[in-house]
Structure formats: structure tokens, C-alpha cells
Image (tube, rainbow, N blue to C red; front, side, top):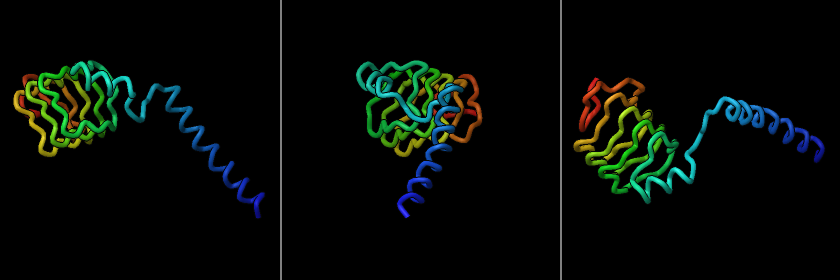
Length: 127
């Protein structure tokens, strides 16, 4: 019985390792980097950074520069993004519940639903 369990465990590891290898070789990141998370929290600047799936709940990101950042699946619930630069950012599946988006620049960003925001989109994604 123990040999069967061991064989089943090994059989599960092979597909998982293959997926990880493919993602690594293609440059696809599945989660944020700690350095990028610390960078936005301490400097309010994180251009072209990886914040995929990061929790930024309740942070004061007013005036932050997140141009071209990947925020896919991030949680920005209750965050203050007043005047933030989100030009060209990827915002697919981001949670903005109760976030302050006043004056935030969404020009060229990819919105929650995957659609592009028009140039000049401020405070909301103009489509």
C-alpha cells in the first residue's frame, strides 16, 4: 500500500514540475515579487513591476507611479489611488472595492475585464 502511495505522489509531481518549468521558461510569473511589493510600499513608485495577486488593501497609494505594472488579480480594496499613474498597467481581475480612484490615470491600461482603457482615462477606465 505504501509503495502505491509513493508512486501516486511521484506521478503528481511530474505534471506540476512541467507546468512550473513552462511558466519559468516563458517568463510568465504567477505571483508578485516581494521586492516589488516592498518597493511600492516604501517608495510609492513601481514602474513595470510585478504585483500579480498582491494584497494592497487599504494602502495609501495616492500619487503612486504604477505605470505598466502587472496588477493582475491584486486586491486594492479600500486603497487610496488618488492621482496614481496606472498608464499601461494590467488590471485584469483587480478588486477595487471602496478604493479611491479620483484622478487616477488609466490611459492605455488593461481593465478588469481585459478591455483597453482609452487615452485620457482619468478616475475611471474610459472604453
